[in-house]
Image (cartoon, rainbow, N blue to C red; front, side, top):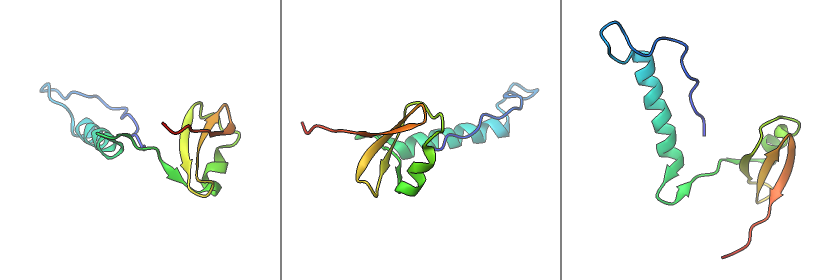
Length: 89
């Protein structure tokens, strides 16, 4: 999920209204939620192994991605990649 950067500008203008920059930020922010969250739950991002392997050594604590080449969920914990083992219910 690509969350937009929080703007470093005033949120409210001199008339007490939300500024255009912040209005756009909220629109983008909620659009990402609508794309990635639905009645079925959270949609995990999909990436090929070449992209997933770039996370090695990166300190993205706790992110999970579906590796389309490995056919598995992969978690990054303190720069190390782990395959997430699933059990059928």
